[in-house]
Image (cartoon, rainbow, N blue to C red; front, side, top):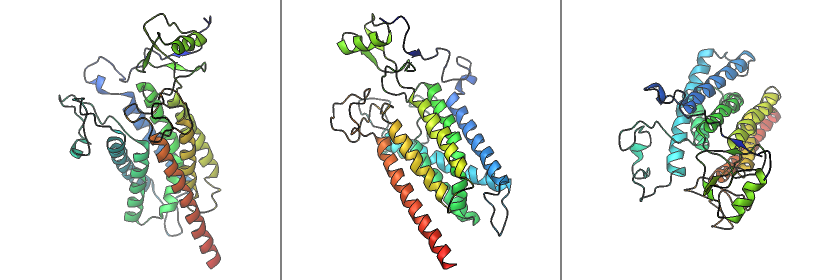
Length: 334
C-alpha cells in the first residue's frame, strides 16, 4: 500500500446548489450560474471585437445594441437546440423506469421543467452539439433579418464562444457529472456519484493498491479523469487563444468559423477517449459490444459525441474550402 494516496477526493463542500438546504435559494444551482457567466463573458468579448471594428462594413457601423440583439437571439436558439438534441438524441427511454420519458412520442415535455410529481427540475440535460446547431441557425436568422454579412458576424461570434464554454464545463464539474474513465494518474478524482466496484474483483484490489486507496470495504469508488476540466481548458481557453490570435489575421471571411468548428471537433473527439460515455447509450460503434465504459479498451470504440465531432470536422473543412473558393473567385474577378 502506498503511503501517499495518488488520487484526489472530490471536495465534500461542493454541492450542485449554491445555497443548499435553504428554502427558495436552494433552487439556485451552480450550473445555471455558469450559464450566466458564459453568456456575460461572450458579450464582453464581442464588445471588445466591436471596438476593434470586427463588425463594421463600408456601409454602416455596428452598435452595442446590435451586439446585444445578436447574442440574445443566438442564446435563445442555442438553448432550444441544446435541449432538443439532449432529449431526442441522448435520452434513452426505459419503459421499466417510471420516471423515464419518451420525448419522441411526447415532444411537448421537452421544455417542461417539472417531473411527474410536480417537483421543479429545470431543463436538466443540454447538448453542446445541439446548442452549436441551434446557435448557428440563430446567428443566420438574425443576420438575414437585419441584413448583416453572415460570415463576418459568425467569425466574430466564434471567438466569443470558447471562454463561455469553459464556464459550462466548470458547471458540470461542480455538479459532479460527466466525469471521465477510471485512472491511476495522481490528479484522478473520486467523484461521489460515480459507479462503485466490488473489492472481490482482483483487478479492483490491484488498482486500489497501486494508488493507495482503501479497499477494505465491499464496494469502492475509483478515481476518474476530471474530463470536465480537460474540456474547460482545451475546448475553452486553448481554442480561444488560437482564435484570438487569428482574429486580425484571417485570410478570408468564414475562416474563423471554419477554424473553430474543426478545432473543437478535433479536440473534443480526443478528449472523449478520457470521458465515460453515457451508461444508457454506451458506444454507437464498437469492436466489442461488451467493452466496459469505465475503461478505454480500444480507439475504435466510438461514442455519440465522437460521431457528432466527426460531422463537425467534415462540416468545418467543407465550410473553409467553400469560403476560400468564394474569396479567391471574388479576388480574381476584381
